Amino acid sequence: MRFLSLQILLMIGLSVGLGFSPAARSSGPEMQVGNPEVDALFSAYDQAATPGCSLGVIQDGEFIYRRSYGQANLDYGIPLSTQSVFRIASLSKQFTAMAVVLLAESGKVSLDDSLRTYFPEFPQWADSVTIRQLIHHTSGIRDYLTLAWLAGKGDDADYFTDAWVIDLLARQQQTNFPPGSQFLYSNSGYVLLAHLVQRVSGESLRAFSQENIFGPLGMTHTHFHDDHTEVVPLRAYGYAPIKEGFRISMTNQDMVGDGGVFTTVDDLLFWDRNFYNNILGKSGAQLIEQITTPGVLNDGTVLDYAFGLELENYRGLSAVRHGGAFVGYQTEMIRFPEQKFSVAVLCNRSDAAPEMLARRVADVYLGQQMIQIEEPPISATDIDLSAEELERYTGDFWEADEAFAAETRVVDGKLWAIHSPTRRNQMVPAGPNRFKMVGTPGEVYVDFTMNEDGIVDVTRTINGEPRGRFTPFDRRQASAAELAKYTGTYYSQEIDTEYFLSMDGDLLMFTLDNEPPQELTAMFDETFENADYGSFSFQFDESGEIRGFILQFDGERNLVFDRVSGPES
Image (cartoon, rainbow, N blue to C red; front, top):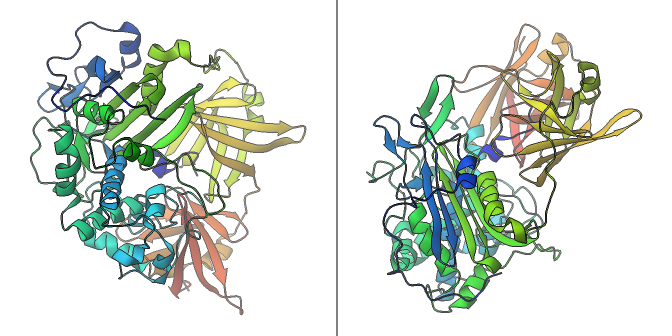
């Protein structure tokens, strides 16, 4: 059970400007005069034997601070610099969106065309999906990375092709919700946009972006990385922490659109400048206004997501941002248009928290213009609760929207969020009925609503944004004989995958391909859960026999598995 999902470890006003041109490149060494307050934020990364982060702080179109912390390559002890080339993951989406908008500006595509206009191989439901909905994550199309995970292709080394992804998406029998009715972040939309660019322009997204975005802006060390075997000079290798230190964490996938841009902190300066004096396309400032205009749901609800960009108010200031997280890379770029101020943080370690770091850097420079807030205490020494007092916050909780459970338990006098038998995070007191989760990327707070009878509900906040509301439930107690009725083989046509359910003593287990068996735990009624694969809601026919289950995981809804054999005798 989990308070954090895989997608979280994977998910994040313009003024006419000053006339900077690509030729006005800021070059030369990184800033040598330190900023101790900023450097202190990166102290954990500023080590000779660890990967780290590169930072760029931009004011009025020029760097006012650049510095890198940690190593680009641990094998050879090569330090990071602001010229190190990082995979920026979902920070890439704004470049894909720009490519599509440039095609629309030239009249080669309409953002209100249906998906099936360009992808006739898709089912009839694609008639109701528009290109605009792909951009704003309102299409309801299931996320291909989550589907690949559920199909047993979730390891860094698992290889699958663009053709496999397109075929996978075309096999889906329905969307998560009626297109345009909700917002649900989906990488699939941006992979489809990459293929849209190719099908309409006749060029790969890489070639089109080089000719129409990166080349004109002078981003000479930036490209969509659509060949994982390509040598990239000055590449920062991606890493993930392990008990002994770090391991290389890279991917052999060649999909682009949802991610895949390789770039540097130095190159991002030119992208930032272009928001104030646009030289791309034909319509000048109107193009920038378009890509920073938020999407709208069918019912008129205005989103905080534009064209690969998130819009928000941070401590009283308007901000435009996006982050990225994939394999050993974590990235963030936040822009404050009214102040002409931006922060880019690119990290080559999967446990980095660049969104939090970028905001803290902005606090240093813009703090006097921001709404002043009092930081809650986060140390158990500030609020000392006994084991008995912590017991008030224990229990099992269900998050209905994403269909997953969370468990809190007191172990050795400490309160823990238990995600699975092998994964847990301590929760330290951080205020009245509030706890901070320790050891997570970014800041995660958990707030308990209490009354005289106990816990009413639990809310989770990640980096200042509400992410999940949990309600208490009583866990079902099922005997081995009851559990045995669920055993058998189940098949999903949509992901072309079989799950095998069997008994191991008194435990119900499920096995996927060559993965080790994992426990499937009874929650309530006919709903079971596995921390890594989601909730299994079993369905019955008129005679009371199990006909299959509905799988939901990380926002993906109603994936159908049919029972093809079983139960065990």
